[in-house]
Length: 622
Image (cartoon, rainbow, N blue to C red; front, side, top):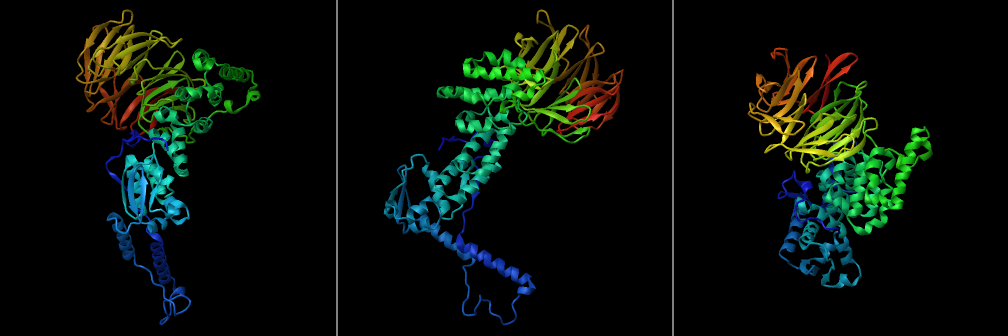
């Protein structure tokens, strides 16, 4: 049995681990017979054709034989008496030893339950004739073996959730099928992406087919998260091949599959002999050509001749596709993996499973990022979801179109650069020390990012190398905007800073807000800021003085944008407000809790697009 953690794993974090799980034992053939008899009697009463005539005996085929069964209470009393004999160690005739710990039991009771122990007691094997049996089990925790015996004696188990997987392995080892089934169902009810790899391995070992299938589906549906779990490196090669060769890895860029394969190989030096076979499961032809050339080609593992041949195959495939001869290289490595898609055509877009936190327009596509860790690409003609990108393992905080690429920032501490023509991953940028990336903006031809590590970083949009790091101070930048040649940052220390983009020194600090600054926007030569302090502020960009305070919202400002020449703001107060040229509130729209706003011009008309806490994306008319 593989070792499992003694303490509660992260995957059970939503459950009180000290709260016991109740597992009810079976109650024997007598109970089943009694239940069947009761059911038969009830059916006879309901069916007039089977009702007895007056004076007819309630017997079987003849009146000389009467059927009598234990009543249910008698059965319960019987099992309780057997359990009492076990608890008091009365009339025990066999001792079972597990890792030096002795358990006294009754051969007849063990024989009565179909299991390994029952078979051991009922055969002519030497152990079956002994009064003290050394089971030779060097792995099972004696306390878990005690639970196994308690179950076989009809006792209700109180099992801590952190021990369920380990007890399942013991139940499987000793072939206690009823207990194994109940434990499998408990694990199924607590299955999630963070424990899916562990549950997959346990389920396979214990022949729990339903649990294994559910864990496999959970893994492949959220592969970017599952493959980074520590347990993933513990998969054996056969299990790894089963996963990486599957078409069911959904909405995941192939670079994530490559990284997972390399991590698995690097976890054990002896695995390197199998590098070419494992990497042959990666579908390199589906990856971005620039990523293949600039990153993967130079990886140490790809210097092996048998591995570099996989890249040669990928480039050959791309050349044939470009010449219209893609069919000449059809293989498992050129077959796309599955993508989820929508077949609903509505302006209310409901594909996300958690709050929508970021929006962007890329060419003729709408892109949305969410707390469900995914990015969705929508066709603005049909409003169908064309693509889901699920490489991030944290909330998607921000989206930006920069240098013809889509850049996404996430709570997982990374930024990802996507080719919007193929939606393949171009690069992963992770210089923010694994801290959440809060905001992105284009800055004089470079990408600027702000994160919870307290820095603003400037990136070359050709090489995607970090060229400048600006230390923001005690706080973290939550919002960025450009005003002319100045970079503006808003932070969780309630201030706005104005940065010189030549020397990267802070020229001004604006301190009028009394809480975190979440939004910044350059509009009509002025700077607009939105804060948790419920206010919007308008700033003169020559003097950096606050010239107007808009305080009609009653809760935190979530998002701001410009629509039809007017400022639009959304708030935790579940309203959207439209502000006129003189900063008067022209309209209040009760649109709910909107977390993201953007605009789109379609067919000559402006459309306002919102992302909400209710998981929806809404497209509004002019």
